[in-house]
Length: 114
View (cartoon, rainbow, N blue to C red):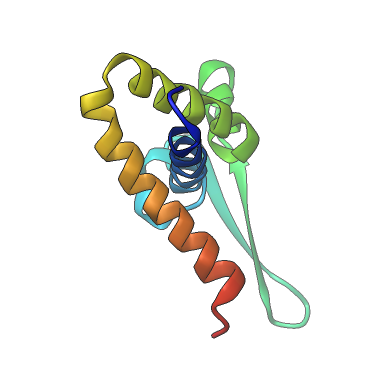
């Protein structure tokens, strides 16, 4: 690692990639083969959404991985760092865009009141 800026970019890129994989609607197609989305109507009329992991063996393991931000986070960080270390010219634009999006999401969530 060359400097603090590289670490800063990798931290926010890892954060954003993890959220993209685990939570974002745009990547739901990645999770769909491994997760069943259950929508339950409560007594007060509100709904609660949760997932059940499909299958067993490898399919279940992948489903668990895709439902756990801690698990996906370590793989995201490893993937991004490997790209940073081995193919920096290809990885840095991706890392930078993910970091910018990660910082923007933190600002949006913590500082912008709707």
